Amino acid sequence: MYFPIGAAHRFRSHPYLKAIMDAWGIDPGGRNLEDIRKGCRLTLGEFVEYILAFSMADISRRPIYDLFFATDSPKGFIKMKEAMWKVDPSGHFRYSDADDPSQLRWVWPAEELWPLIQEKFRGRKALVRTICTFVNEETYYLEKHAREALRSAEQRGAISVAPTKVDGFKRRRRTFPEDLMITFLKE
Picture 1 (cartoon, rainbow, N blue to C red):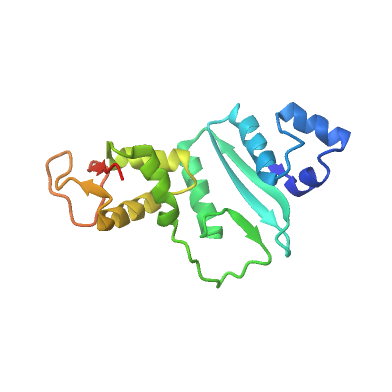
Picture 2 (cartoon, rainbow, N blue to C red; picture 1 turned 45 degrees about the horizontal axis):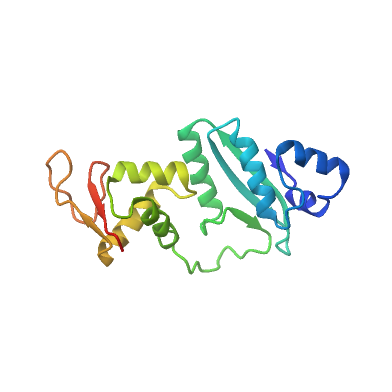
């Protein structure tokens, strides 16, 4: 769905646009763009299970429009996230003509994802399969990022990893197969 978020924010007090936003449950009085994006997600969420937003900005990095991808297909959701990560490896899911594609990325996705995983599973045990399902369905990240975050957490001693998988076979070092049990510490 195409949503002209820049115009919606700029003209949010116009009676016609205000009526549309009210009908969608979007707070037109919201002072920032995230309020409008949140309203769009909530409205779409009444009809579909999975929603992603990708923001387009002009040369001055002012928002022009957002593209919302909405689906009930878990596979389609993951495929769209993969496509978005290719366009914006920063994980912010935005594109601007002002962005320099050769610019170095200072924050690694696993570093941003780890606090989300840690909050969800702190003090519990979980299979890698369960962790990946959480990451796929409830975050903007992908399974590969979950495994990177787990690898880094293991190196730091933030998690305890079972030496064998559920099926009894030994785990290969630094791998995180689906049927491996992870114990999250209460940091």
